[in-house]
Image (cartoon, rainbow, N blue to C red):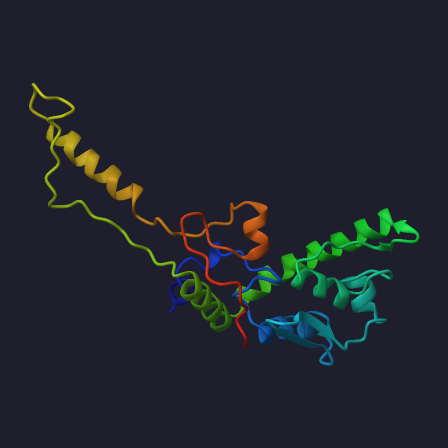
Length: 212
């Protein structure tokens, strides 16, 4: 079976990023270990304490050059992304370090882009993540069909007999308009993307992580 046929519905349109509530701890930990080539990294998550990234070779090249900066290592960047906190370098005493902050933000963007690719690279993992998303947000296609439904156009053209082609066109338009009312897309506003929330019109569950 082709990969596209084995995937859960809409997997390619789901925005997978670090910190969304429907991706569990084990997947995040696996991603960081593989990407940073460091099996000493540990990720924890709980409702009470939130996300934390522990361990790792924080002074190594992967952490401070490839996926991080000398001022903010990749593990710290990942933790801020998971916690959905701003990426900033500096402190209250000396103020914001603009260039260092910009560099760290660029690495954060690269790490998130890599995670969004990694999530779907393995078909089995992709199917599991898509299933978790669809189950959590209860997103299923609910196509409507108007075949066999008699559509009256008397209120529109009360004194003339409706053209059969007009009736069929109306049925087709109604079917298309209701084909996938809950389909998620990547074109959502920034606040929805940060939370990994479903598109408008789909109820959002309680803010809890998927513990795995």
